[in-house]
Length: 352
Ligand code: SF4
Image (cartoon, rainbow, N blue to C red; front, side):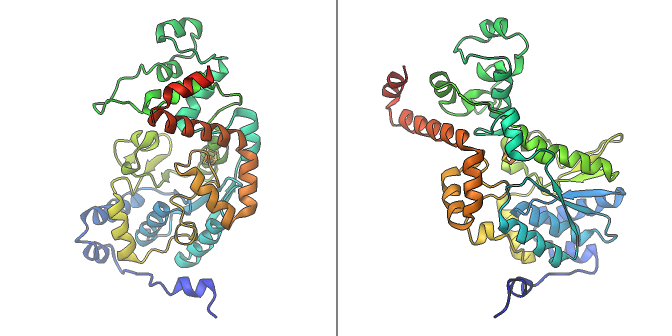
């Protein structure tokens, strides 16, 4: 029986002799074609680019593009091992190394996720929410439902988190700013009635990824960091950027090759270049990879059921680490469901 490698390697890896051949091959897909052109030009300009590989779908496409245009083999590849990663992701990294004949450096977290969470707090719903709640908790905020003016006089060093809490940020023309708490339905009402009894923070990402990336880039004298953010993924992370490239003469520049690609462009890319994604998607049926059971996951309960089925040991670990956050998230989701079903009054009465 053929082993996994033999099966995966049967997928044709398209090779090209020149950039113009690639451009010709992708001429019916202008966004993809443009992506190759830009990536080639940018890599050409830098001496020591480093590309962050996650093992996820976007990262697979980014890697395929780079390996096709990096004719001088300048780009280094790094994966940040947060300590709670799917075995399927690790297997996929091995596959990528063989498919592209590259080395993906594995870098461990500066602080393991359980210690970072214990020290700073646990992720809850999203990075931005966790950061705002962390700042409020640091000032011993009592989750009062009062005006910004009244709260800023009580907590004078907490301006931007209070702006979030009181919906003080300029709304977008859609009516809601993602930097206001009302961007997440009924979140404020929920917190006022159920103040968190545990610390909340987004710091585990800093110690498992962000600071690790900075250390890696600095210690390897990198001048370009390549990451897989797409504009269409939305959220605070993607909207922080206006385009695909941030040039920085004094520090490390950043390039986001997939920035303009939509989901449809990515599907087209997969078909054009026979991209094979990790078992996390194709076998487990997950919609995202990364840390197992991260509380930011939009489909957390589905993900937890999948974890339990395919990676039970990791499932147990995630349930231990994020227990408080999971319970609080579950309670919040139920609150939203009740409010939507017009049981809001009952809910508020119960909690009073
Ligand atoms: S992805 Fe989630 S669990 Fe992983 S480091 Fe970031 S916040 Fe923590």
